[in-house]
Image (cartoon, rainbow, N blue to C red; front, side, top):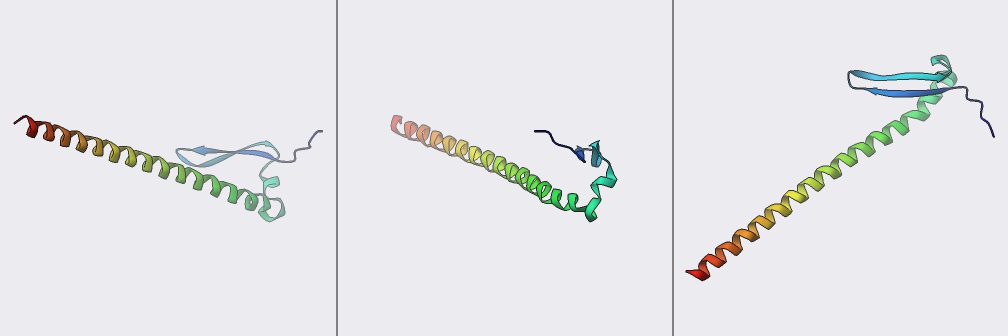
Length: 90
């Protein structure tokens, strides 16, 4: 099975500005065919990817906060044990 690609483009995220589009097959004219239909089909995918990244970041932050709370709880229990031992020895 072979495919005849009319348009193949890659959007490259740039740290210094807007994404750059690299056309491997076809050109911007082909991208705009059908009143920008390709753009309309692409936008939900891009939004979903951004949402996934945002959710991953929130998960990471939550995990860090959980780890910090666990550490604080462990330190509190350790202090209580030390205080208890000190009271018993006096």
